[in-house]
Image 1 (cartoon, rainbow, N blue to C red):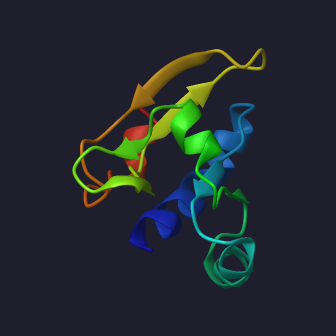
Image 2: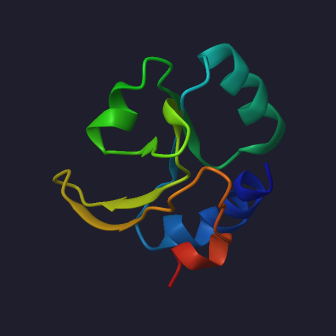
Length: 102
């Protein structure tokens, strides 16, 4: 959860630059609602329990299978074009929030 706390910390800078932080999890919405209420204010959390969005962006964890998503970061413009991405090879790697600002 440290990564969510870090993202919450940079949310004002992202907003000031005209962006928004959206997280996607393969958890059910009921689990995400509790997590968002507790620690992810300032960002939108989406549930993808079927993995449709995860597969669309190629975010399946190649070591553990398609039921686990990698903690990727994507910069998507207003037209839906992916302009930048950070795509670790494992769900265990969680980049520091400052990496998203550089």
